[in-house]
Image (tube, rainbow over all chains, first blue to last red; front, side, top):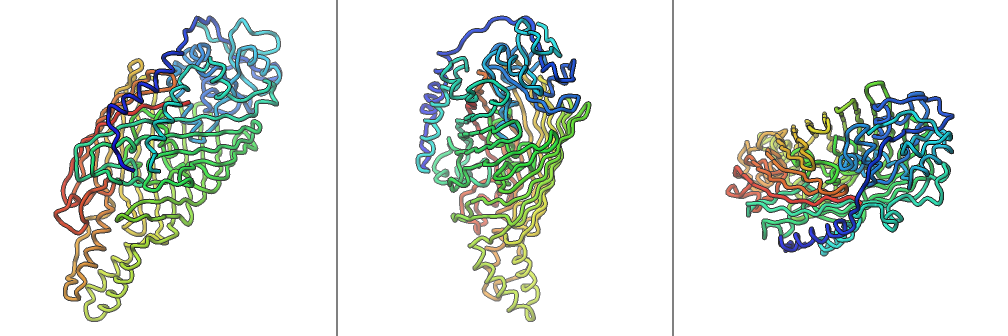
Length: 152
Length: 445
């Protein structure tokens, strides 16, 4: 393997790599309250921010009651996810991404299933007794139980 | 792998498109789980993801070349002080989730190695089954779990610095094992414990004296205990492995040393004793190594700290060994994280010197060759590093790092040095310093 790459060549590639993300970057809006929800059949009635944080960082794999937990995620780069982690444990999206990439690519655990919207999360929680998700508070209905509210 | 660098660069262009926020329906289709519906039963599916590092390193020595770990080799590297391959990597992973209890994961990593093959570029290929919430069983090819960053060494995006400290991670090119493991988890009120037992085999290729050598372990066992509580994670590990095969270049040496030991047993017992001693220390086959590690990492959102210490003790001195450790400290300021690292390794053996005169049996060259090989594997160096990580994107980061390395005489086991081993005027016999400058672009997609 002959090494003959020069810095100009490398710089060119770095710039080329960044162009797509700069072109397609999008703006975000504001979110008021975020509700952490579980299935009504789940014996858990409330959770602390630490408990939810440990579950979402995969540090604990069960509810405090001992039953297994199925974590549901939202759009990986979305505004709701950004707000959720900032309010939950102060982690930025960049930091949470670095945390998850370590777990995911080390074989430690695979990231939670990503659902396309709060409605999809709510409906999945409704149909799955062990699941937990976070959604915009105005999407909450009687089909799920709110165990934590994260305010602005 | 003549075109490795072009393949990596081209892949980065493709990876660049993955930095587009995932609002795009097309990207979502590729990157997210393929879900025909969102019912609980259908949370299974395939996910393809990846990561990469595009890196450039320059240094100030003409007679030495650094490596990230000893599975690399400085092919043609003494012609230039620049390397775009040392830290550049591209990883791709496919994960199929059958259900919430059963997964299949396969991961390949294209990285610079002395001998790149499909086999040694495959890091993971395993099935994972969770019969209970506290037990996970895996079988196949999995990451070796010996230390804090053991199975994330290729994942530049996941850690702050440019590369795992070479003094700690450079000597052991074990990235994965073929076998099985069991992980037990205990969730406490304030802490989460994890116990993992691994068993299997592992093989890797490396270059020594311009030749390719296959190294396979007869058995590899690893036991690790981790405790995570708040901002602090602690991990302790013990590994044991035994080498299955011998290096071909040792065969004539063994024959010569056996002959000298036997021929001089009565008339020249000192020479015989030295020949037996060299024969004992110069072998890989059946050499057993114990490896102890202790690590801690702390991250409170602002401050990042990480430290590890380790001790390795093989039954033959030719296997690189000693005491090693590092401490790293960083502080987040917005999207920037400046950091510093100090890392050191000290050899587990003194510099080997001749203690009898083999010229009287006309075998001085044999004696010096055997001693030189032993001394060549000694690792005695320390590095001070400073750098900054810039998280300019939610899926990409840029890093700059400078390293100042000091290597003691006959402590170049983590460097490739130019010149004949037997020449006492060569670089190996000198106290050496090296400065490195590296820029790396890290992406995940």
